[in-house]
Length: 64
Image (tube, rainbow, N blue to C red; front, top):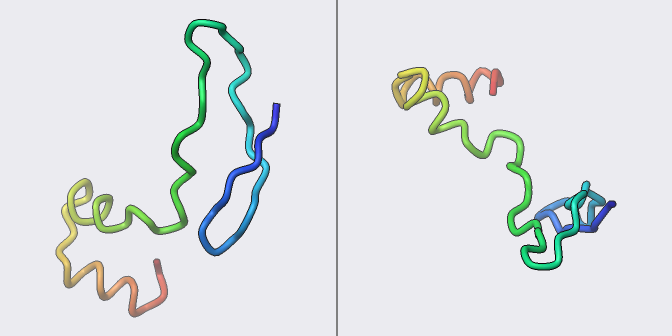
């Protein structure tokens, strides 16, 4: 059930694999999980409508 994936800066990590095994359409994991803060720009500026200045301020203050 567990497969090993390479994560940048971390190394090899065991993650849950595909639980159902089908002969015609076997599943596979092609992308790794998001790294902490990887999508901050999109979340804060697009979804929450923060300005770039607000985002930089949060980074500078150590909030994110």
